[in-house]
Image (cartoon, rainbow, N blue to C red; front, side):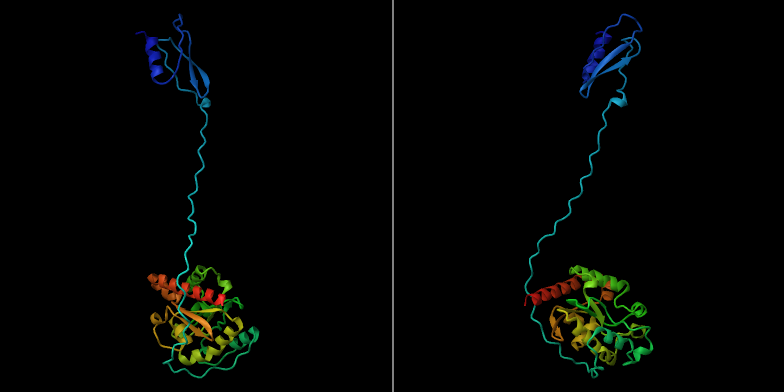
Length: 293
């Protein structure tokens, strides 16, 4: 078999339909015609037909291939979750086994006078150790009211309840029910920080109780969330552990009240967040039920 025939067989085996003319001159140039991408390329080859080899296709004639844009990962669509069974009926306040002192001084019924009275309060010894009073924060016409126990160190310095890490977690809990911090009202049982963040004494809570009742009368919320053991026990006038107070709907000042864990406790006990979410869902069902009445 001649070298030309072998070369043609090779090119055909490679899928190239090539025509190599016979040239009598020993060193005449040879051209190979290669069909490529809807066109025929004329590729010159140096040397004799017997010595000639097909060079690579020039890069400038290879069409650029565009890389397709990445397809975004489909985001999960929210699934409809049927409403669970109705919440349990609202229970009256738990009987109080703890002796409480008589209520504090009467309070005014407008925000400015009430705030001024709290700032100047000397009803209990806590005014001697406070940096400033912590009145409350949020929407004064909110439908939801969150009540904690007492200011901590950062709250005492900044004059606002629930700041720092516990406050950030409370903000997440509020967002979980579809609201923002600015759309609820947040207050505490006490308006002054107890030294070393100890539990409030009964007489301290009693001295501040009328301030809280005045705030409730001005806000007029549809639901109260008692945040933590101290808040729940003081509002419901009981020493019952928080584990037994959860899961029921109570009443304070004729307003439905639901008990949940304090964010500071949830930061230490991450596994309890699921139970706290159950409390918030109970509060949300109670709120919706009240809105329909």
